Image (cartoon, rainbow, N blue to C red; front, side, top):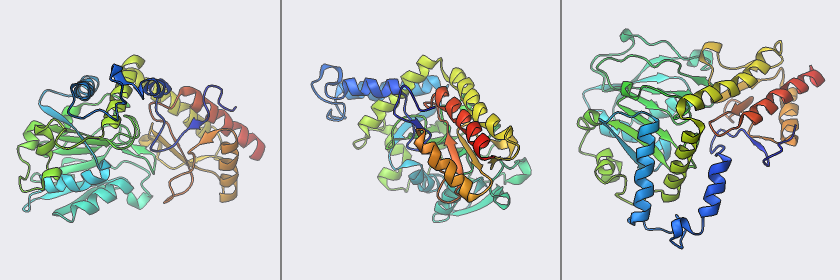
Length: 365
């Protein structure tokens, strides 16, 4: 049961597992990157060597994610949490409203930040059912003159995920994809802005990716502090100030790894297989394990569930740690259990967890 080829089975929700091959390559290059005699962390961000790393990461991201030519890619800092404020600062005029689709804690946080800068409203919400599902959206759910509609594509705490994104017509659509970006192919052209913290599927914490439609940028408010203005970072190729050079290097290496897996179609198929192993153990348990998310809204990235009582849950989590499983505790705000099965979590780990779940049920059911 215990892992054979690594120290633990890492199911942390973020920062999360990174591909072993990427970590090993970074280890080899750590003290002497490309024969410079220096670590990537010691290189000037203005150097040609680092500039190549930086630009290759952007190019690789555009290619893998099929980002259209009329979009810009920028690397920022401050995580998705800073984006919650930057977006209304740049794109919410005083005479309009922003619509937020409420599917969990992160959409709540994004909504709260928006109210400091302008008017926002709830397009739809599943809060009344403890965020167990993704609400349905139609044209009557929002206003034609809204500044934008915002959604969170995957909800790490509650374990729900959008399967099909809503059609918003002429109203710009913005997506926080921090926890499922690059886990499957999507139609980027449906969105005017996509943003994501890197620490789930793209690399270590410290880098935030923003993918922005050029026509949307043209509508941005120009009366914004320099560092909070997207145009500052677009015009400087994300090099206005010192970026997270090591984080961007690692992001590029993770993208190379995704290419070696066969691209996003192959990654998506693997993610479905991994999640199925754990969901099957839940569904076949006759109620011993109870999933939080409604079946039609289940996430392939964060699998949330409860056991029949708190004592049994504590025992499950304690024994899981003994068997080498890390990060299975649910978020502190909701409790329970959560297995985060991001791209770099190997199928071996998910199979081991499903077997552990079955064995634990046999002993305690």
